[in-house]
Image (tube, rainbow, N blue to C red; front, top):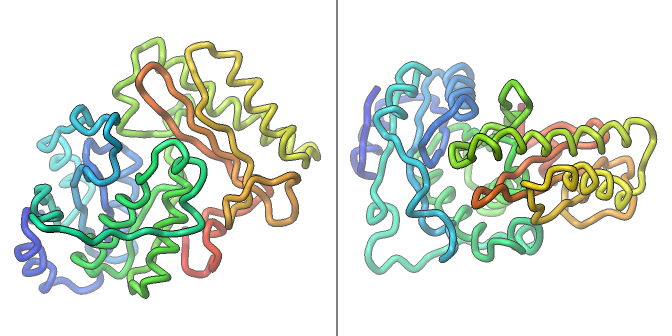
Length: 293
């Protein structure tokens, strides 16, 4: 496994490789990340991973300084997962002095996470665009848990004619159903136990939908009701939205729905989602053929 910290060195190492799969991360890796690395290796033959805590996607009152980091452990995990090339740039390598260019994806970034974290997706789209340009991979892999982020990245890649195919993989969960996230380490033991309310709330709405409930507000109410049973969790939002536009729905139709939520446990904010109506992760794109499982 070859590690680099500069764009020049990465490009020199990448020049000797053929088909490449790429997994961008902010480090503090877990099984969700590693499953993407293994998928990239399996499908492309060679896997590259970036580790970069992107300051542009953190707001002034967010957790950039305390975001968990353990580079040595990350590298050990990546070696075991079969990564071939690891890019670990410093902030000034990505945003050198005088940096002025940012990417904004309109239409998908005015609600949900954007309403809570203004400017977040500008930072995400910018760094992913730059990393895709640096890496020049055939495929790049993202986890479906952050559904809005997946939609923004796919839209950005298509709009800017980036040749890398964006692959959305299913959410990887703990045995008790909690979606894997680097931020789970922040949870106290009590909050960790309480956080399973997220998957219970989503499952309750899924069951209601499967039983014939199509009123979107009723589905939101079901989620809110289950969340209210756990006083340690404080919801930021509960959404039942069109899976292509993120517009809130009055009723779930043939297009299905993206059911998503964000809940705070103490100072830790967790996201999760469910896809209603049998839609697949690939349907989170206006052009589903652009994505694959």
